Image (cartoon, rainbow, N blue to C red; front, side):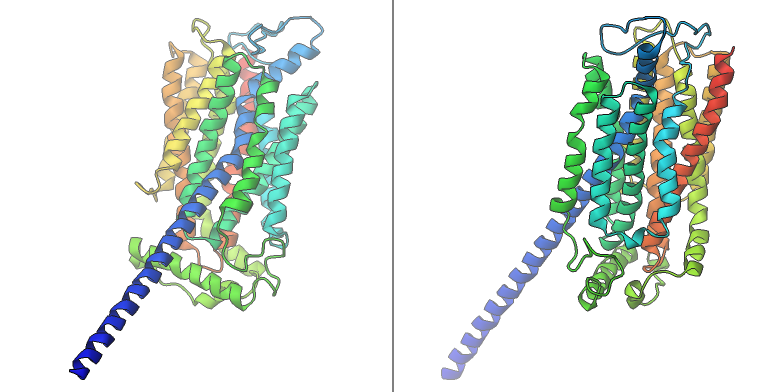
Length: 463
């Protein structure tokens, strides 16, 4: 009898221990899911805020140039009462209703500083702690909105655009590198957020100006965006223990044994996800290599060579894309439409960003490895719209809006799939550098597009 009671007591205790263990496991699973949701959401907001000023400056390009021409013109032509600064230049006698200065000027100011930062900072940015990088990005964005809002000359407006470019360029490079410290699903959040920035920025600017708010006042309302970036980074993200927030990434203190163990744990999680999706690609090196120090120059060059197969088609897609956006769209003006020229231009930009949002949010549903196919399709778009500008065979703006939406779908798909496959195919030790270096691809394509847009604008406006 006593033995039976003892067995029953032991069984009850074992069941209690098992129940407690199940509760601990359940708690850890819930906590893990909570961190993943926080990090996905945090990277979504960071992507939104990082690209917001860049997108708004491109959407405002036509207004920025037209406003300054109106303010500085020797012939007093007043702006329209709706606040859109829809002013026809008195020297404009062409069929394209051209600005004397192409919107490609704004694109150059919006991309060249970013390109310089990405080309150079990739090799030294690991010396700058992530916390300081984010503070710089926030400060640059605030300065950008203030300068453009209160500008009285084109040069002052362009300086504001330069600050937006600096903040966006450093932010993209840094946040893509930062994804190496988190599980791989944050890349989907980042891509979707950057696409959301396009829609939110272009749509918000178009809607507020269409409602009667002046472009300068519209830009001032957007100062809430850098504040959201600050809050998202420091309060929403669930950083891994020992993350080097305010110290150099390679210092021994923050990345000591505890940091190395945490990094190995994160890398193990990433590998488990990779095994589920692509089990044939799981021939990885030792996990201990990830915290063994910075890459040598030889290793960096080897990594750059590896990612070229992704970066070159991405650059081609963005070259064609921004040649369209900043070289051709301002020339596709339909005088018989109920929308003014400025309104047509703004809605072209808005529909393009809708396409980008949809495709950058599609990574969970579809993955496209053949990036050169996307590049070819985007070049076909550029040739078609170039022909439409020259021969003027399109009857209405809604046809342009359809093509622009499709253009955005291609561009967004190229972007998010490029970084997805780089993240999957680069080793644990090279991943952080590879993600940062690959961010140069789209920026270089955009810069070349802006340079090409200048002669195209001059040619068509001389007809």
